[in-house]
Length: 258
Image: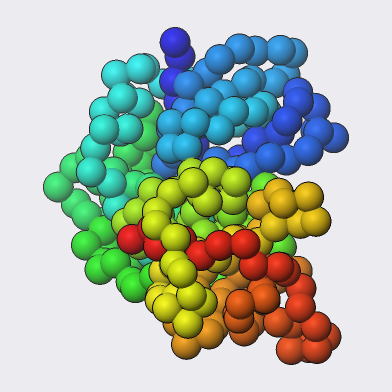
C-alpha cells in the first residue's frame, strides 16, 4: 500500500471526492497516511495518527517511498509547540506556515532543519527542535479566539474535538478525532467541583448524543471551540455563556484522560 507525508500547512480531508464535499478533518504538516484508492483528481486516504479516512486533492500527494514514510512515521518527532511557525524550503526558498500539532522528524544532526523527499526545510523565527513542551493550559490558551470551523484542526479554524485533540497532541498525549470517540476514554469525575486542568467535559443533545467537548482549566473554567475558542464557566448544568446570560451546552460527563 502506498503511503505519504503531508508537506503543507494543512490539507483538507473531505467526505467525498469533490471540492464541494464536507470537510471532515485536516492533515497537519508531518502527519503520515495510507493511500487507499484514487478517483479522478482525488485520493482517498487513511491517516495514521487517528485512522480517519477521507478524500484529498491528488495534487497535494507527494510521491515518496514507503521506506521513507515508515521511517518518518516511527521516528521520535518534535511536535510544533505554538499555534503556528514558519518553515522555509530549499531549493525553491518558499515559505510554509505550519500549525501547532504538526510533526517534524529532524533526520540529521541539525535540530533546525530536516528533509522530506528532495526538499530541505528550515525552521524560521528562532525555533529549535529542542524547544520545551508547554503545559496543557498554555497550549490551550494559545488558541484563544481561533474561529470555529467544522473539521478544522488549526489556529485558522478549529472544531471542538479538533481543539482538544491538537492541544493534547501538543502536550504529548494522543486522542481520537471525534468527541464521541474521546468520551470513551478515561475515568469519570463524580462532581464538577473535582474537575482539574486537562480533564475533558462532554455535552449531549436532546437525544443523548455527544455533540461537544471542552477542556477543563480548573476552578470552574472551561476552554472550548464554540463560535471561537473561548473560556466560559462550567457547573453541574453545563457551560454558562456569560455574554448571553444562558447555558449553551448541557453537561453529560467529565472524564480524566491524563
